[in-house]
Amino acid sequence: MNLPELGAFLRSRRARISPAEVGLPTGSRRRVPGLRRDEVAQLAGTSVDYYTEVERGRGAQPSTQVLAALARALRLDADERDHLFRLAGRAAPEAHGTAVHVQPAMLTLLDRLDQTPAQIVTDLHETLVQNRLAAALMGPPAHTEGHAASFVYRWFTEPESRLLYPVADHPHHSRVLVFDLRAAVARRNHDARSTELVHLLRRASPEFAALWDTGDVAVRRGERKRVIHPVLGVVDIQCQNLFSEDGRQRLQFFTAPVGSPAVEQLRRLARIGDRELTPAR
Image (tube, rainbow, N blue to C red; front, side, top):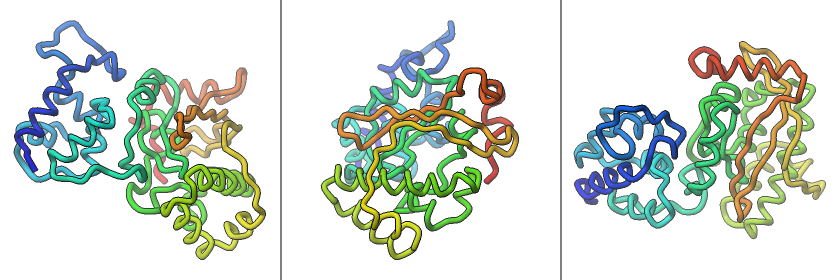
């Protein structure tokens, strides 16, 4: 672990990024090149004081979750991300879980969708990063570690996760999640993480086991969704997915059908955002 070198590396990375590249206002009076410390902290979801201590090479060893968030905030490529982890005395994360590396190009596209709820998830339905409107509409991730980070796992093991959708839609979502998971397991060549997830779900949920045993498969590309929001009510929207080259990550974005009530609902969400409309689920 080399915290002073870690701090120097962070400073060099934020100096090369303009606010516009990460979806932040540029402003006319900037005394430093690139991003300010408070902007990096905002993008990574940490406090300014904490990030400042890390950049100064002080304080405790950053966790893997913080390092992954910093790598995304600073748009590091895979080699730079691994270097960041090693400077912090952490092993570079494997290609799974919520600490997985997100491609900078996909993050750049997410930044451009500042008026549309959007998020990046894995093929096991683990939320990696959200914009503020997606967090306000769908709620922030309930878990960040273990199999509970997967929405598929929570859907079949935690009944409260289903409060996001009307009861009448639950059978549809169950089928779609299971059939999409089957495609993901095959795409991953039945790796340990995905096969263990299936094993746990078969034991925990008779509903999952019955659907899995049908053998049906269907990649989740796009569909209409009805989302229950505590302030906006039921929001009937279109969900589309853009996939990474290997299919293991997808950018989900939510739009309103033309002329539908959801047009005004999403406008209201965009105006107020997470200040007032974050679901308390």
